[in-house]
Image (tube, rainbow, N blue to C red; front, side, top):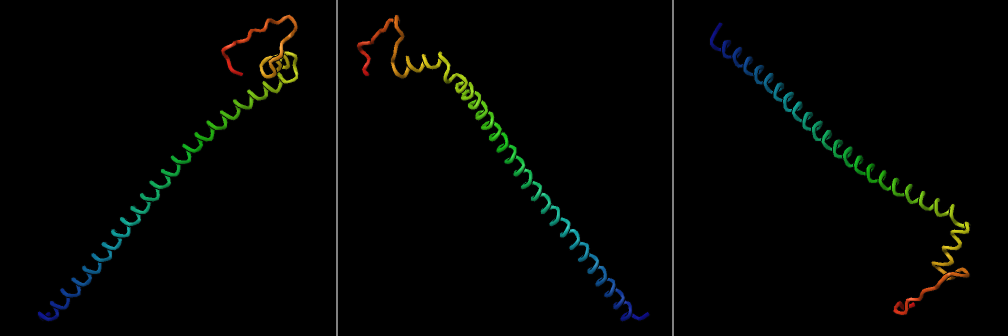
Length: 111
């Protein structure tokens, strides 16, 4: 084998090695890019999950407050029309008194 032939074989091997190294480098870069994309996507989804959990807790608190208010209003509604309710409204809002009640007027209070 002549020196020229040896040189050509060595040159082909170097080209083959460079091609293999370039392919491996591209695979590694692609894998790193994929892992980076997956990491960013996972982090964003986790942030959205946390935001949704917080919103869910806020809405649940609003629902609980609305249920409590509903219970209070239903209790008041059940009292409407009873003698006790009519008497209380007449005393508090209309300033009426029953016969025999002692009426105390605060002279310092402005009407």
